[in-house]
Picture: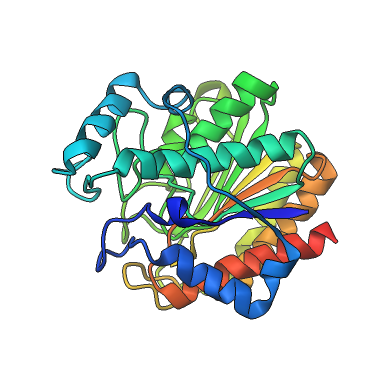
Length: 314
């Protein structure tokens, strides 16, 4: 079975009407889910508030405390100017993480096989600060929790968001057990300006990271040229868990990026990874929505991911 996290508490992660990452993104996704009838084929899971000690598996105590304090007055920024504080920002960010961790528990205990957290995949946040609309790094917390609670070390993190997943990459750049594969717009043209092909891991982790920068305008043909590299990379690594960050800002028409995938690329990626999860990970896989600022695009792309997971679960 596949579970999807949906509810007001998760929708609250957003930075106000008019901001690219507004609080309407979850509802845009869910309306399409209902339209396609996928809501009848999944378990709808209630969002869960994460706890401070869970956040601190990845983030520093000082940073978490800072978010708590700025959550009270809702003033200022949590980074250099991209990620504004708002009243309740701590609970909103902690709910993204808590929902992902609740999904992880469901997957690891066998209650569900695959999970989608649509408002998640906040891959820019660093251990000590926010970045790029991302307050807490839920993929990072998932990876640390897999080690701390479940004894799972070899984790594959796959990212198809237009932006490089720098917050995950640099946190685990020297960790040989984090298998990182990221197709993204070339950093010469897009924030955060990282993720070049030569960045493949450091020290003992050399060769365990695969960055695939693609040019502005990269379409599905380019995706299908590159995707077999990701499949081969993961197959060689034999991960114990697969995490997918399915950012929809790589779909043509996003207001802040320049790529030209269609939602079919997202569906293909999810189907491929679900098959690999069944082969190597006892079916265990967690997908996160990631970026995407054209509401129609994110609705279609995330539902393509969901459909692929549902078909694999049948």
